[in-house]
Length: 582
Ligand SMILES: [Ca+2]
Ligand SMILES: [Ca+2]
Ligand SMILES: [Ca+2]
Ligand SMILES: [Ca+2]
Ligand SMILES: [Zn+2]
Ligand SMILES: [Zn+2]
Ligand SMILES: [Zn+2]
Image (cartoon, rainbow, N blue to C red; front, side, top):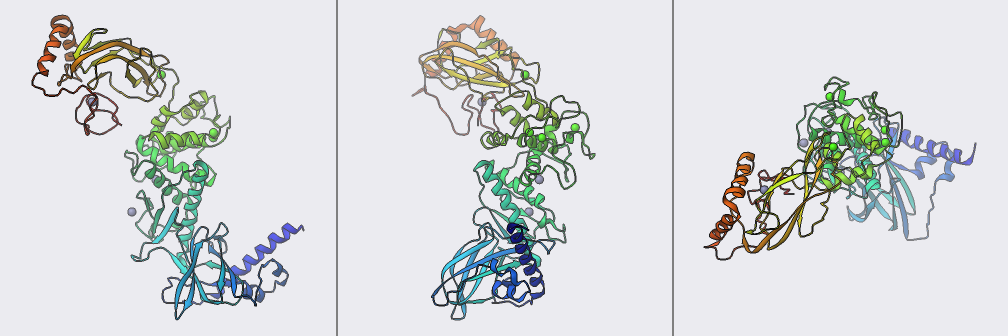
């Protein structure tokens, strides 16, 4: 037997000894009136010596400086698991060292347990002490008792002890409320995983237990039911991490969840809506990713590509509606997150999972682009190739890669190369097409350059626009088309130059009623062929009379669309003109 093995065995025996000793020691007494829960102490000085394992004593690192006045106190906290023969550590928890001063305890030092559940207090005077531990790390999570209004955080005091030298103490929390440490531990695992992956952490959340009759997240607060309502929930790391994932999503989105209805209850193969499936799919993915295991507690695996086929009878089969099925979204996220496996593919698919650990790409999109569903994520995916297409397709989320074609013609309120005294320009374009997923919208730049390239951020979902009031100058309008799956036209449709003359003013009413193709077309034909630009200019000049200070610079009225000036009704795009609002 090697020395490392012997050492490991020795540690195991000590822990086993302490645990056994613990269960027989409990006496139900409390050490002071304020203690919420009594629990038992293992003092290695007495407990280990009392047991017949004298060979193990060199493992104890205990020194007593009888001659000194200041001592070092080392305290370790553990909690028993649901199976009380096993235990885990209380790491990162808030701890106070309290000294008895004239019949009451005063906090003299405080800090946090390390990742071994240990805290060291240095330079401690001799005296009578107790230590208080609280399920709060002041960083990621605190766990509060739903039955208490005042001082609700779960906390425990040790029995009092005297310090006459350096001392090491180890405690194990074993009462019925120790489950608070289970969820505390699990959520810290989740926060730590995210911190490692992304360098991002959400603000602290509060777990309230017992509360409610079903585990759920309110965004910043998680409610966990009592054992009477749903037995053992507090111990379920998959449930805890799932609800924590909802809290992450909530804060990432600035305090809301993606919109969308779903069935209640919902299952991994439930057909819901794109927003709901994104929200739940993210949570299903997160719990498995933190545990680093795609296998779920129900025996299914996130590596399965079949969730959109309703394998448990909660959805239809044979279609491509993975964006509306939480399991399909979770499967996609898992394949983005995990390594490659050419055998990981849908039955009908040629191509397996060749996407190698791209969680950072997914995170960037969720963090920066505020996607509302997995289709938004698909559109925002930066490197678009057959491998990415395959994992979307395997999850039953269609994705094509062919770019759309740009518009081929246009109508406008202003003639190209002709000066105009109307400072607001109306434009309608035609001919953009996409055979695969269909045209979604356009990125548009209006500037003075003849050859600009619009960025890959969609500005308009409609096929027409009215500009803000333009200052006098020469303008080009550049249009680039995007399809429903996020493919961008490779070239640009540029129109112009349009010339806004000195003294031009906006024409208040839209010249052509928007949203009515026939009227708009008739209006254009009328103006161009019968009335003519001259009349339009006279009209404009006429409108100008009576104005004291005609605005010629771009105006952004709060609450109004900057393109058409009508009331901002919310949403990403203007209801009237289709301009991007946010
Ligand atoms: Ca389906
Ligand atoms: Ca995979
Ligand atoms: Ca993969
Ligand atoms: Ca296409
Ligand atoms: Zn609640
Ligand atoms: Zn959920
Ligand atoms: Zn508008």
